[in-house]
Length: 239
Image (cartoon, rainbow, N blue to C red):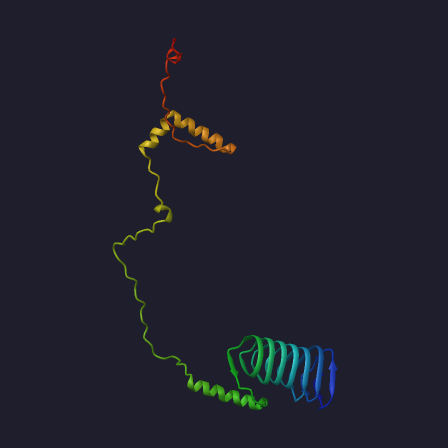
């Protein structure tokens, strides 16, 4: 199909549409893919995948849009990838948008990849009014934010790091384990290791410890022995 015109109040429904030029003042519904060179009008466009060079519609609702330029009042799409510019005057809702130049008002975008973005305040305006407002906004920003190109400059060498002939040795941080006191061997310990009684008590303690007993060492009390009287002296004397 070369050219297609949809008058106001009429609805056309296609599964797949391939056309050069489309003027849509009514409603165009395409379930599958829509291929065209240009689409214009004041109607409503609903399609699965739109592959068009230039689109200028009132309302656009699609899953994926690929093309060069787009201008609409309301756009709802899952993915928009354009090589030129996009202008949405009222509302733009998309999950992913990739376009070099974007002019929009109210929007809800998941992921945006754009080099030049102009966001206009919410105001009732048409597509032409949005294009004019975006032009003056870019002109104003270019005046107040000037970026010098090919300006003269003097290259400054980076300061060389200071080098010293002798490097000072930094004290190494001592570890926490180094502060722990080391056990000092006393001469008394050496004497105990050579004592036979100490070795016997040490072995007995190890055996009793495994069986659940313990060993307590107490000081031995000194016993005082009293001399016994002679048995003969205890016998009664004869009268």
